[in-house]
Picture (cartoon, rainbow, N blue to C red):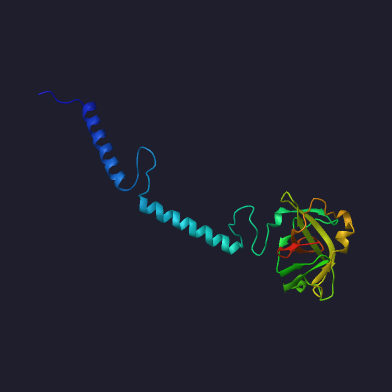
Length: 204
């Protein structure tokens, strides 16, 4: 009988060891060819855990997952749609704050509203008129134009439109239908904070 050579024996031993390693490692989730896919149930659990973690993170940081372009909570129209064309100030970067208003009504000569939370939330006393009353009108093409037209305090829940009709700081009603949709928002003097946006129909 021919005795196998030493190299042949070593080859057989190496093959046996390799097969044993593959069998043992596959049971432990170690694969030689690529990364293994998790079982469907495990993938679902991981996805749910990630979703829950993201929700908790959003809640703790005060962020909301509202679709882009939609109005913020309490805004009757998206604040970003208001074009600050008149009035000499731009509150486009103002952020929602504790001041809250509601109940807008418009007559030909002015507006009235009510405070749910007044300007004391910004540290202003009852008669301190250091906030901007801002009015916007919707043009026939659907765009919103406007801006500051007066000063306002917590003691004032009405404002006249004399400045608007008088062309205050460029104010113009050109291209605005009658009646039209109107929006009102209050912004602090530094244009950093704002109330919610409320709307009404204005017939002039």
